Amino acid sequence: MSKTNNFETSFLQLMFNNTSISNVGDTAGLPPSATTGSLYIALLTGSVDFESNETAAEYTGSEAGYTGYNRVAVVRSAAAWPVTGNACGNGSAITFPACTGGTFTATHFGIVTNITGSATADMLFYGSLTSDLAISNGITPEFASGSLTITED
Image 1 (cartoon, one colour):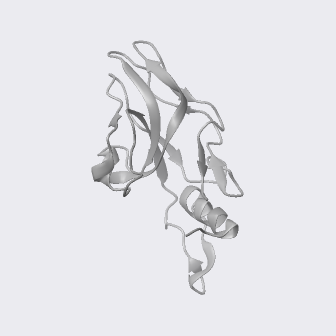
Image 2: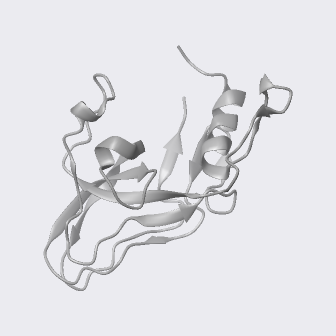
Image 3: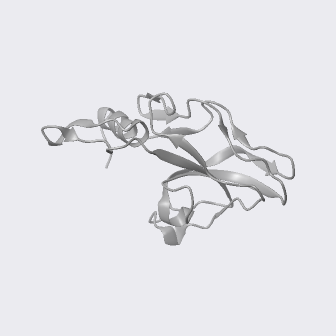
């Protein structure tokens, strides 16, 4: 079953811009959160395989473990996550803390709901990187503006 193009856009705007969806639910529509809040970007290695039933049990990847790593908060707003049609992307660069020890190869990313915790429990969206990102001492991982794309279809 698919969503209409209009609802795909509205859903992305609710999730990423904290914008209500008109005419869903009561007369006020499906309201946004009381506070804008943030989504958090995680670096992952290995596969992210939710395809069979999209549950945490299917998660086979792991999160970055280099010294200095933290998820990066990105506010839920139209500037931070511009939505065009059924897609949105990061409106500015997303820069992770520099690696101060260890090595890690990022192959995927996740968009999660908490700054800390289990990516298996709080992941909303995930995707593969276009190329692997080798991280070692002194490397500061970054996603350029517009390089993370989320598509509803």
